[in-house]
Every structure is written in structure tokens, then in C-alpha cells.
Amino acid sequence: MKTKREIFRPSFGNRPDQLIGRDEVIDRIMEGLQSYPGSADRSVLLVGQRGMGKTALLLELADRASALDYVPVRVTCGEAMLENLIELLQREGTQYIKETRRSVKGVSAGALGFSFGLTFSEEAQRSFGFRVKLEMICEKLAKAGKRVLILADEVTPTVKEMRELATAYQELSGIDTEIAIVMAGLPAAVSDILNYKTLTFLNRAKRYELDLIPVGIVEGYYRSAFERASIKASPGIIREAAESTQGFPYQIQLVGYYLSKFSTDGKSVSSKTLHRVMQMVQEEVDEKVFRAMIHPLSDRDRVFLSAMAACDGVIKTADIESLTHFKHGMLQSYRSRLIDAGIITSPRRGELAFAFPQLADYLRRQESAQGA
Ligand SMILES: Nc1ncnc2c1ncn2[C@@H]1O[C@H](COP(=O)(O)OP(=O)(O)OP(=O)(O)O)[C@@H](O)[C@H]1O
Ligand SMILES: [Mg+2]
Image 1 (tube, rainbow, N blue to C red):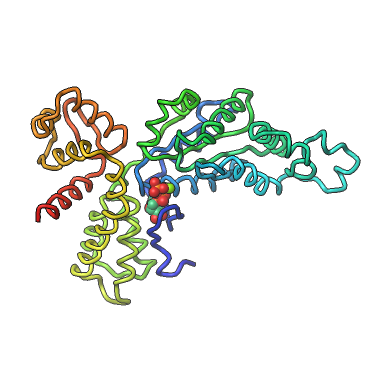
Image 2 (image 1 turned 45 degrees about the vertical axis):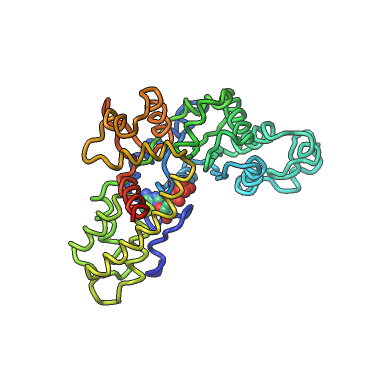
């Protein structure tokens, strides 16, 4: 059983107490994973801003896929990802290979490429590259009725190993290997994919955008989670707490965490406590999410965003043009860049919106802090 303090876990890359609001996307991905080898539905790309729950969803998918005879392995995009992938597959997959040391005795192990289980013979280890090793492991696992699921987190197309993985996956799926891949990345990283020929298959992958979770779902979750975390709160306080998160997963965890920290056993959470918590959460989200999101942008991107934040209600592209004095062509190019980076959206022709409603408030707060 989880202790009161463990229900809410506001850090990146962990498994939440309960994964909420993702049932539909999980069902669709799982359905795709059941399709035939080589099917396009077996490659998935999850796109979402920082803290939107990409890693949490990958962890959940790994669990669910295990029940479908998949051997899931999760790697983070980077230099060591291919080595890690092979090693993890060997570690996780060996349990399914039923052979005793005696049964391989007498057979020319080198010819099989494996010395035992999923351990490569010395020669294979030395002479084969990633692509062949992956194929050999997939084949051996397939004989044991298992398939390989690669979960690649923090996908960055500029990483050479990511492109190597993409090419290997594409080739293996072309020969109907029992393999599937789910990748996750930030919108800005993923939009870069278009610039890499070897990654075109990522464009063909089934793409799911992870969005904010409906506040009603958060409210329902808080009702049960607060009880389990021994947080006493009136329905009004629960609703206000849920609304304050605006459905942002990281914030859902933060609000719950601070409420469990500052609530007194047996006493109902006061409005004052909730507001103190909301203030702390906002500071943390500003620092860990928005500052990180704005940091890589250029000064002109920021001018564009400030102009958007200064608009009330519907934001018209024409208003941004007159506020920024950017020439039309330049305005269009900043507009596309910010859309690609997942920071703004264009809900209708000629209109713009922030992908995160809270980002507008953040920019306004920054502006007034600088002006003060
Ligand atoms: N569907 C969900 N329901 C409840 N909590 C969630 C959900 N998804 C994520 N969380 C929580 O939100 C926080 C951020 O999630 P996660 O680390 O998965 O985000 P991320 O998109 O991978 O972020 P980053 O881009 O920084 O890697 C974690 O504390 C996680 O437990
Ligand atoms: Mg993550």
C-alpha cells in the first residue's frame, strides 16, 4: 500500500499513482500493436510538451504490452541508446528462452550466433553491428512466441543513433519481423524530423498529440486520491484545486503533493492553505516548465509571444502584425516556427492561441515583473 506521501509524485519520468485521461490513446495504441508484423500501426510517435506525461505513458504501455507477449524495452535517445537497447533486450528476454546449458552443448554455438540464451557468441558479439544483433534477438524471441517492443523516449533526430535505430526498425519491419516501436518527443524536437530523410518513417508513424487532461477527470481523480492520501477537503476545495491544474499532468501531481504536505490530519483544507499551495505550484511550474520552454527561443519569438499575451480574447494574426510591426513574411515564418515548437496553435484561419493557457499568464507575469 502506498503511504499518504507517495500518492502524489511530482517529478519527471516517474509512474503516477494513477494514469488519468489517457484511456483512449492507450486503447488505440494497443490495438495497433496487435496488428500484423510490418504494419504501419506498429510504429507510434507520441508528441507532447514537457510534463505532459510522455514518459508516464511509455511506462504504462510497456506494462500493457507485456500482457500481449511483447518484451518491452525503454531507452532514452542518446549516444548509448543502441547498446542499452540490446543489453536490456538480453536481460528482459532471456527468461523466455527455454534452454538449458546442456541442450546447447555439442552444437556449434558460434554458428547460431548465441552462446546461451540471448547472450551472443564471442564472434557474433565482436563482428555484428546493432542491426544484425537486433534481428537475431527478434528471431530468437519470436521462436519463443515473444515480440519486441522498443520504447524510445526523448526522441531527437539530430542524434545519430536515433537515425540508426530508425533505419534498422524500418528494415526489420519491411521483412515482417515481430517488432514494434513507440517513440516520444517534444514538439520542437519532433518537428525537426522533416529535415532528415532517414527519419521519414517517423512521419508515417501513427502520431498522437498528448494534450491537457479535462478538468472534470482531474476532479474525479482528486476525490478518490485525496481520500487515500488522507486529505480532507470540501467538494468546493476539490473543484478549485482541480481547476487550478488546468489539466496539466505535472501540475496535477504538484498540487496533490503540496496539499498532502500542508494539510493537517482530520482537518479540512482551508481556502488559505489551497491558495498558498497554488502559489507554490505556480512558482515551480514557471521555473521547471515555462522558463525551460521559453529559454531556447529567439528574442523575436518572444516579441511575438508577448504580443499574443497582450491580446484579450481571440488572438488575430492581423493584431499581432500591427503590435509587432513584423513584415508579413517574417510574421508567417515566426508563426510556423512557434506552431512547430508546440508553443502556439492556430485554432482557425487568421487566429492564434497558446498551446498552454498558462503560458500567457506566465508571460504577463514576467512582463509586469520586468516593468516593476
Ligand atoms: N495521465 C497522467 N495522470 C496523472 N499524472 C500524470 C499523467 N501523466 C503524467 N503524470 C505525472 O506528471 C508528471 C510529468 O510526467 P512525465 O515525466 O511523464 O512527463 P514528460 O512528458 O515525459 O515530460 P518531459 O518532456 O520533461 O520528459 C509526473 O509526475 C507524472 O507522474
Ligand atoms: Mg519524459
